[in-house]
Length: 406
Image (tube, one colour):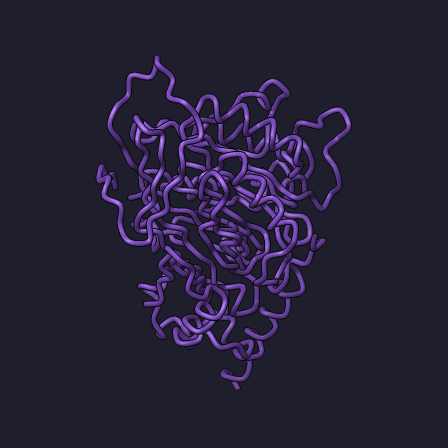
């Protein structure tokens, strides 16, 4: 009888949790330092696109390592148990298994899908998110240097919540670059260029739109929207003050592993404008990667890195990707080359009672995670064999990019 009652209690708890927070879908409008300059197999080279400034005294070459992950999508399940405990919030363990990768990279990126305004407003779940600021603390501890803050959820909790999030980052983690949203119109004209091992790296970020509609009429500069004229203007300006440009694009069709027409259009545009790398987010599933061969240069494109951390209730929603590469830049020839270009699958684990969350890479993922994975209890296959086959089916065998499967 006690066993039956315990089982009923667990079932009741799960049903209440699902009713309050949901776990499945996020349905929305679908619209270490290396100085090596050796060009490895699968390397792509960008042709010279500008003349060296005579005042630039840098010579030789330098390089940096990059790691990027997808959506930090903070469903209520991720903080619900901690809220019930009433002992504060700490999410460090959620990121700890991937810390060796993100902390070691010279430049590490994450898409901050949901605003973290803390308790200035009630915490909320889909369809309008507001997450604890402690998420940002854990993101910082995990070693991320760049967070994208331009998604369809950026204004879920309103302008004040976004401003609080941006101010919190500015005050607490000024060393972390935040792209895609601005606190003032003046700030929207100040381009972000990081010095990474002597290479000037320009960072930009855009979203296709927001669930809440447009920017406020009196703040058209608030969140960067994908627009050809704006992108042309930004790329022209930032190219004058940076050596290479990496662009975050919140685009694509949700839950679709294919590349849509808009993605193709803007990938071509950004290549023509000189972007070396494009990091795609939004679909909540992985999409292919490629080295796009343009007329004047090549561009490394990860069309979608999927979810990095979430509580979505399908196996494909639990699989994301980690972009990993070394970028080499020659100060004399102004040429960029890439080596060790990889797509490394990531998998989110959550137990069926929502006590434990972890994101790991394919390297560490074993079937020990499978039996009590929440998604397994929903009838989905979360075995490593399934993950490998799924990734292989989506990613294929792109030229110059290693798809890591073990």
